[in-house]
Length: 427
Ligand code: HEM
Image 1 (tube, rainbow, N blue to C red):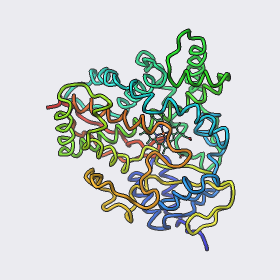
Image 2 (cartoon, rainbow, N blue to C red):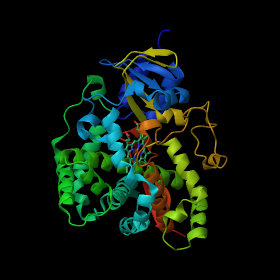
Image 3 (cartoon, helix red, strand yellow):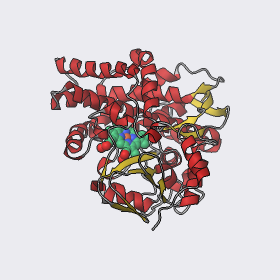
């Protein structure tokens, strides 16, 4: 069977959208699916890639035959940046690293560490000026970073935040899809990210020397591995994977709430009824049904991981195609989550659709991935965003400001040109 291919106009649009996209990434991706179907070949010059938007085929890759796929090529930016990090290793080494990282990602371990996360949230919110437009993504990034370091490193990152910002931005820009896909290899990571490398190495060495180390991820890693470089790679990986995604989800959730004032009111009323003015706790926020539906729907419409990457290690059948070893496979979370065959009115923000707990065949909804590489931080992330959103909504209401943001494929799915909101004290 001849592979479904794109017309030259669509291919050009795809390449352009890797950086910015005209009209955003959504129209381009949807045009691809309409033109060439749910499993198609992207004729990239160095190495063909197969783009998959069909839930059954995605399940085939992630859950049914994960052994037919390796993670990434050594020349991809993510591999160059994270080196031996769990996200980019395969086989027995991957299983060994997950084994060490899993205990600190169990709810029984992190729940008590989340009791006071609202205090860090308040430190950011205390700086907000009612009535003035605020660019929300950088604020959510700071919140997510503070929360991550509290829970996994037992640290207060606040004083260090400004000094890390430039290096972090460079690292994220480096990680996103870009022209390297056409060249077939990325340039080495920017020199500025050495700041982060040095910091994670210093954290590992400091913790190794600590007299009474806390029981957290950092301690688990230094206890398991005598090699500081290997520890640094895990810290770097977890730090980026553990905050950039939550940043994206928090930002898109607030955008959706601001642009749907009725839903925003419903969620705030629920929070007020359950909590009054008491700060949010883990036990309470997981029971907030309206908030839960908003978070699920935000993850459906704006999955922070927009594209999954794999590399075939043997010939595999994907939908109508036989794919040779050494091919890139790109799994589109974005298209599967908006597939018109599986979602009524797929592009509409409709939290109520989650009231009935819809069940689709295959992986039509998999914001945290699936199979042996499913997100390690999924449980923490789900609690964290509920805690932080609850606190933000207790203190502020929002209206949108500026142009409507479009999804942009950065390292995570980002709003372009950003989410700007005007906060007012919550009624
Ligand atoms: C809303 C937040 C998050 C989303 C949507 C998300 C999504 C994902 C997805 C889709 C994958 C699978 C990637 C693949 O199969 O290629 C993944 C993997 C991963 N995530 Fe998350 N994630 C989130 C938060 C977190 C947090 C908070 C942490 C750490 C504390 C984390 C750490 C990881 C790691 C280490 C992996 C790699 C697992 C492996 O390869 O075995 N993530 N995440």
